[in-house]
Image 1 (cartoon, rainbow, N blue to C red):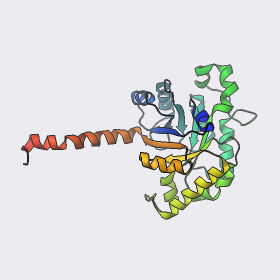
Image 2: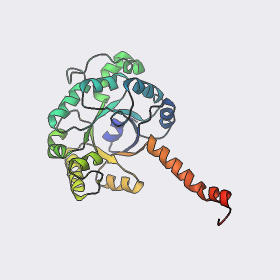
Image 3: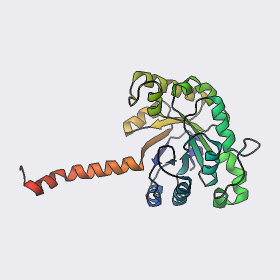
Image 4: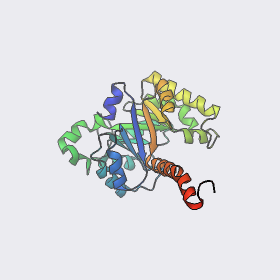
Length: 259
């Protein structure tokens, strides 16, 4: 089931972010039971060439493959989609006009102005099939992560073609003057405003959840797009857990029990 179909049916979607430019890691993640996989080009060194390699490695994934582009730029949106991404997530969308520009860049005429040249994407399903479905099946997500975006949230949500909103709590906190403090009351109030307006507009929304309890809390507020971690985070967690489990064994080997 595609991400769009899952959201349209009222379900919640769980996914992870990919930041390591290694196709084998991408292939391993592709085998897991996630609803979406998001290649992050904004906060990683992944280049356009490496993006193509990652997308090839993710071809077997049952999950919808998205690309978080590095910046709001028409060519970046077009390139990600031409290389085979099933949707894009655009950072720092702050006005209705910016959101409308994102939609236009991602959709073919007459609904948008996307250039015609799906270099790899059309080869995955066939050219005729791709052009007949691309406008309807491309996921377009906007990152809401600043005070200005919160002020303009209703204008953003009113843009036809917007598929969903992802709240960037870290940047939102920084924008509100609370760098590295996503738990501040001002941030909580801004998040509440975003969630309430998204729910009222019927636009799917979500954000990062570090634990299952956090995911449940988000879902109780109507969130349906839940990011649960990243390849780098899982690597760090796995190594930390293994090192912790072996620490007592290692100490015993070096100095003996109680030494």
